[in-house]
Length: 265
Image 1 (cartoon, rainbow, N blue to C red):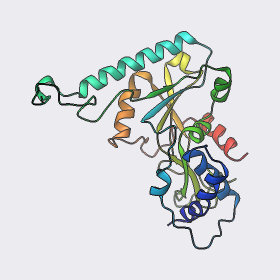
Image 2 (image 1 turned 45 degrees about the vertical axis):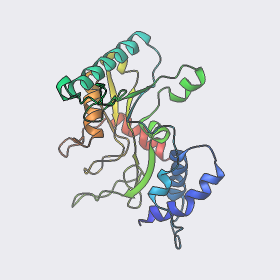
Image 3 (image 1 turned 90 degrees about the horizontal axis):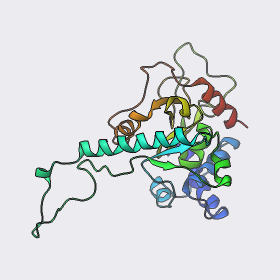
């Protein structure tokens, strides 16, 4: 059990009792906040493992989420969603079994379920498009880190070691390396529709943790065209691919800087 897992074991139950109704992701994030604010000096942990925590329900246990964070151009947004839906329908059709492969039961009825042979069901990417002014204000111009903290589950692990001859980042930042620890996320994959999406019909692809390149950060992002989102999401979810740039740091620096500032407020 790592130092963070020990800390989580101590604090999760108390935080859950103190803030009932918030959901697993928010409870874990509160523990992460406490971890970075503490000296993490603990005694024997309460018996609690990830299996116990994952029993708690959370409203965002889905495959992938497209989050709308700009509301200035309805035509561009509608065009994006229509193309996304068309790509999803084409992709699901391409992986469904052919008619000859569908088994019939004794009554001559289709014995298959509504998913493809690869277990793929629509929607592959669920769309979050708030309509009330209050909800739109919550998501408008949302940062990658802000989205991760709302929709994904936080945890803390050992930071990647810098290459030989390279110093650790200064000042330290919890999204890459603070005292050898890094804040990271796991769960559903996030795609963010922002103001630039109205122009380029792309979405920000949000990384839950850093890759193996120091100093890439949790919450880093790059842009993917709407025509590629469904296939990328499906392959990532099935562990058929991971995103990397061959050891090069090609993520969006502007969004990284925004995340780093937010993390240390």
